[in-house]
Length: 121
Image (cartoon, rainbow, N blue to C red; front, top):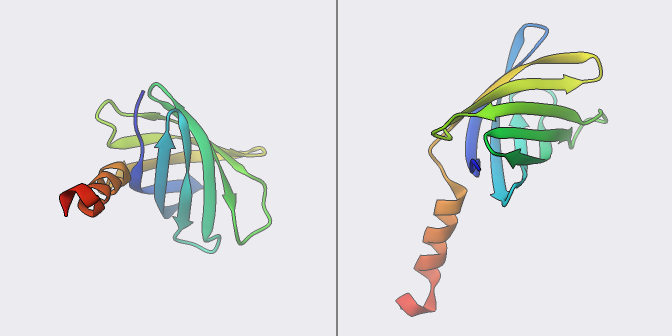
């Protein structure tokens, strides 16, 4: 199973127009949670979903706008550095893609825990 924990920069297209976003995802087992910040008027959203093998699916629910949850489905590359797919909201849909920025939350948390361990003092 792929691990998509970390920070991702991406783009989704609606009616041919791109919107960039930054996402921070945390994966535990096959469950994924996190936040997305759109570079547009809709702002911040929460994410909840799952990873099954190299497939990902999640819903994005905006915190600032009363709008239905947007469903995302996609595929994760073998090296876990890129994912892409399609988003759906009612009858509307469009492509999306995201690249890992190199920041890995799991690694960062492990390093921080090791640095604050009383055994290292």
